[in-house]
Picture 1 (tube, rainbow, N blue to C red):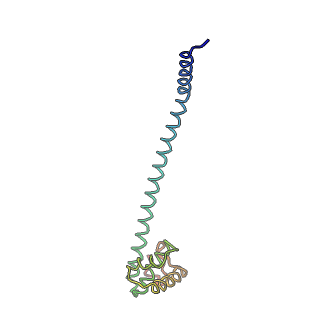
Picture 2 (cartoon, rainbow, N blue to C red):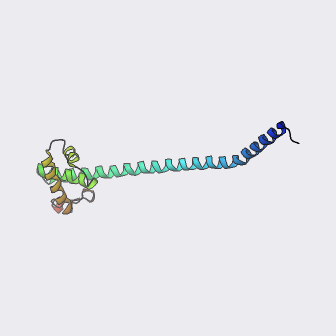
Picture 3 (tube, rainbow, N blue to C red):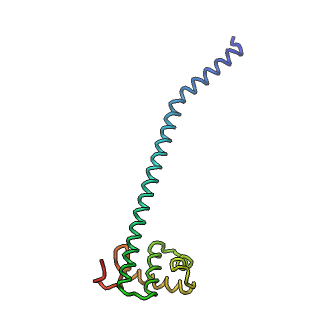
Length: 143
């Protein structure tokens, strides 16, 4: 017959054995979690690099647009229309407040709406500063 001390020792031995059996599983799970964390860090770094490259390309497109718009001797309305067009190319759902912000905060909602319509027309005619295309700039001014 087993005494209570023997039963307790037997139970403790079973727990110890169960823990020993789980140790490799726990180590594997921890290693897998470390691997996933490292992979997530690599993906995040790649995302940051891609975002930086995209911003660099966008800045180059804005610089191209500004340079060629200046060379084309455009009116203020034409320049502001292109500012709004560039905003819409990046964010087609931009609202009136975003348009007013892009215009330096100096436009009434009705004016922003007018620029939005003009910009949409300009885009429909092929405006694409990322590809150095402005339908209103003479071919000789293009890069």
